[in-house]
Picture 1 (spheres, rainbow, N blue to C red):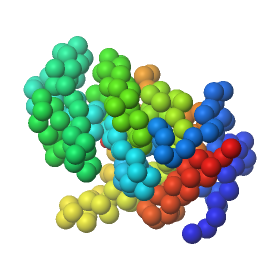
Picture 2 (picture 1 turned 135 degrees about the horizontal axis):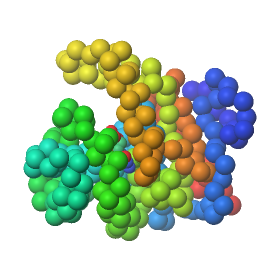
Picture 3 (picture 1 turned 180 degrees about the horizontal axis):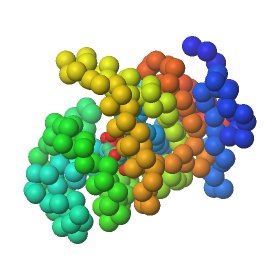
Picture 4 (picture 1 turned 90 degrees about the vertical axis):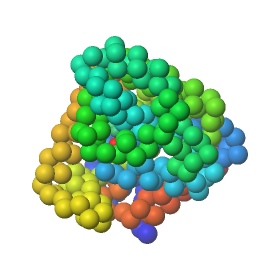
Length: 260
Ligand code: DC
């Protein structure tokens, strides 16, 4: 694997540079130890391999892994399965509260439960994927999810938390904040490969259009939009293998943990 320099965000973009540090936050925790409470956030658009990378990184560092997308997907599944129109935000949020979403941490990866029942398979189905972005744009729902995620972090204080707003909104003082990125073309190609590997035919141009539209929707909502968090480390995964990304993140965390 090639070596990658950490560049300031002001530097000219360079195809060879895949890691760069965004402007540091005013209050930034510089000193931390890997055997103490630690929060690492991983944000970024769909198709960058975030979830798998976050899970693998958590394993390598002996941390818990929180998939916050699963929480929004669970809300979307509840809307569909209980016939709640997503325009009826009050009813949807009330029902999601009653569902008492939480994770079964004995499973690997942790299983999301609603009313004590697993929604793991349901949340990956295409009808859920089709409506989850507008569901995730409901401000009152985001408020509820953010509060829940912070409670989870209290109960699991050694955590890799993955989503869209983890470094920017939920855990702005996280020890290390990553933003995984990749070109829309590469993400569409990866998604097509994934589908074809599962025996499902895939139209790459159509996938590309969907990805561009989902990015637009996730980035343009007023509440908790997908942004590069202040002080975050941007890693472009376009030309890296999965293991290379995980190793890069692991070495950055270990290097930072050793900082005086
Ligand atoms: O990462 P994913 O595809 O499972 O996420 C599902 C949707 O939820 C996606 O539209 C982005 C949204 N999401 C969000 O708005 N905030 C998060 N913290 C996590 C996911």
